[in-house]
Image 1 (cartoon, rainbow, N blue to C red):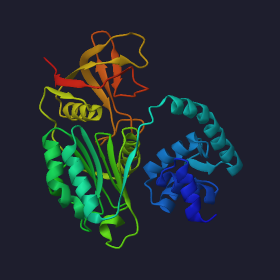
Image 2: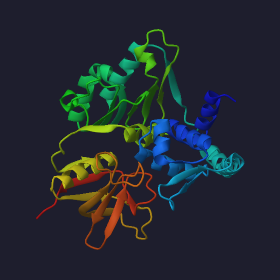
Image 3: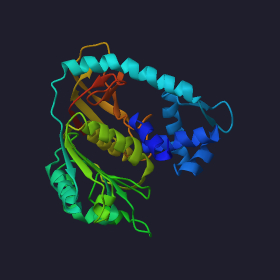
Length: 353
């Protein structure tokens, strides 16, 4: 099996491109320090530690942090295959059950062949956004959607933008002023990716728009169950490798947010500017033992990875720590599993003195 096919097979198991590169580097070296892996793969040393932990959770490597410096060692391939096979077999029964119960939502996919169509779909989709936009886009095409991004920010949409392939002399924050809630930039090769309101997505190799004769294709889809996966990839991979360039000023209060990440971002910005902020939200218990249906209190901390310094434990963790009249609890968005409560709507207001 050649290297390309091997990489494709590993990616099919759910490994990101960076996880694949890190795993193969560890496998070929027989064990290495994070700095050596970083030099071999082009991934930052800090990110190598995160990738190594993810690979360890999959049973593919061991992380020996009892030595200095920490060593990452491969597990025998036979054990890796056995572990992955066991995980897949465990999933089968649960997948069969969900398949039997599902409504068989129709997935709508469009294969896009031309640069003009990709840029048009980006523009139209951003115009329709009501709560959240995530976007990676080469610098030379930002101008194509500048007005749409600015309008989305102005109407209160959370916009997370990664500008790729910046000019050789760097990208000035003024060049992206007002285009996103948070803007990052990277020189790492990155596909064009867009999600809107976690229901629409578009993924395209950058060559589709940069090369007129490209044989590659972009894919656009409307599927609420698929788009969150792309958002997770955006936050867990491409957002992590990019450097923060610009952050918008916090919005004025009071404000109501149906996008939980946006509420977390605003609370974070307000707290960092020494503006006390409180929350009122309809909630459902996740790990809490009571049955309360509304929560009010002062936000004392946030766990987030939207702005630096990041305070979450893993890329998609975004939560609010709230001090109520009885206790201090954590609140997450829909589908939370670590927090005390989950919510679909948050009202933020300035804390009364």
